[in-house]
Image (cartoon, rainbow, N blue to C red; front, side, top):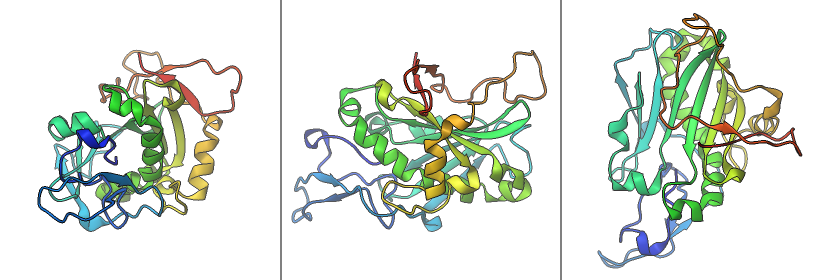
Length: 270
């Protein structure tokens, strides 16, 4: 997502945001007057998030628009380029790890990955965001990161919707598939799973500074109305696919929440 770190650890030139399009999450407080002048980025937290198709590069790696994700594994890996500030979406059978290499990715952890799942015959899209854990800078600004990820998720989902548009046109029922968003954090307050409703609604344009349409945000706040899909226990069943998650860091263990069972499901990583 947006680049979140304190000034002493930042390069001399501000790092472009993952969603540095019409409204960037970060802007410098002063312009560069000299080539090597150091400036501190300031989080731009307000204003709508806008998706621009012209800034999205889509890579199809071993998949096409003909194979239904209920029969052939299908994942999304969304990152951005420091040089061009453009988004890159890889659509493949497994997460495209080549996009996740380098020191900047390990420092900022602003990628978003997702996978299609068929559970008991029903298709759903499972989206994963890394909020905190790994190093202290992520922990230090976890609340801000959680806010920004939620704010920008409609842009992410719109990128999925646009980038894989041919598949969704061929199988329009996938547009009605529920979107489950996993927020990964070592802090229980921000480690949770939310249902954002059908994909076509979750990818709707933002209507306020907190991101997402009013309907989508209401659905996310009422995510307890749906149960997180759990595969059946039968071996070699035909109603669940793929048999195990394609995202290595997707395993999350439910936290007990007896005092307020109506809140979104909370999870912790093992």
